[in-house]
Length: 101
Image 1: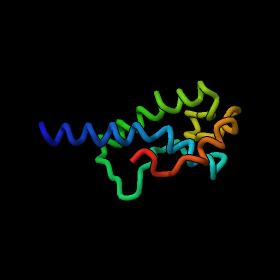
Image 2: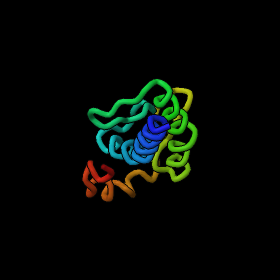
Image 3: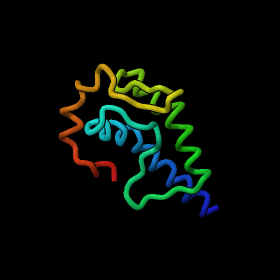
Image 4: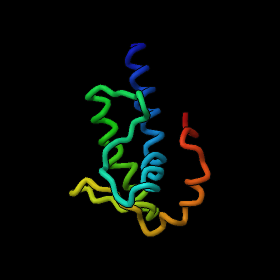
């Protein structure tokens, strides 16, 4: 039970950072793969990784796409800057990379 709770906490922590990490990565790249972004030294088991991928593709990236911050092409597995990305650029640049630790 304790191990299961630790895994749930880890998944929640990784999920809570995904939208932020995607937006931060798009500051440097105009397009990127729609894969989960993990912090240095962060690891996930295969089941955890599949959970993160599912949530990223079916919840988190579509939310960012609805706000027009990104364009998400599910078939090509690509994320690009959206029409409104530049509106949030200054905000993203001002916040430290490690704000969500």
